[in-house]
Image (cartoon, rainbow, N blue to C red; front, side, top):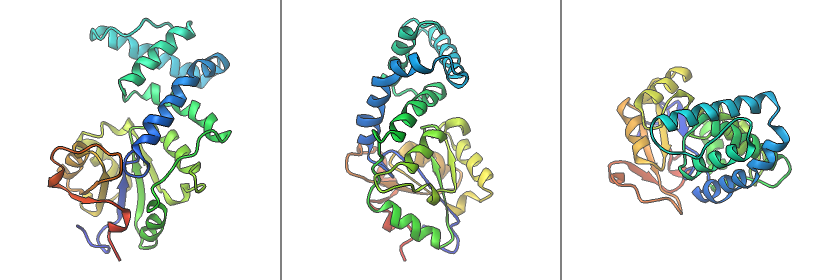
Length: 244
């Protein structure tokens, strides 16, 4: 692994790396599903929500063209929108429109205290340590940048957005595409070789390693076993990243 004088950026996944997978799948996704109808009833006429709805309807058209047989949807029918949104959630679709709508629903939960994000206990102290050693910290998650910022602003131990320098979502590309990591490195003005990427998913580590990033497989309680994981250096705690 790159030494501390050479590494400049720590790039992190969120789910299964910074926060337990169970928080996303057992808390966040059901929260959005259970509240999407009420949210649309209250906010569907707002411009930003109208943008999400239009994008969802367009995505539905693409699904129909592909022969995927989603439930029918129209922008005027909240019930049909709810059915299609739930269909997307069931498939864990990496949909920008879905992620945008979910983020708005989660914002309500974070702001009223219904949601607080659990971080693994080693995350905050080690991000402070690494930043003190002049590393920048960035996030690359399939969740929207908005949702990422909400999560770090509303954790069980407070607002930790001060520990994160940059956020990236699938607007830069798929997490399994090496080009996405190249774009992130260019945006951060750092060579890939000076970046450590930490994730619990081998496919993502493969993509990042193809452009020269240093990669670490994060092994956390509740994570799924990763086929091919033996090819990557594994860590169980962030204290193993550039240890002092």
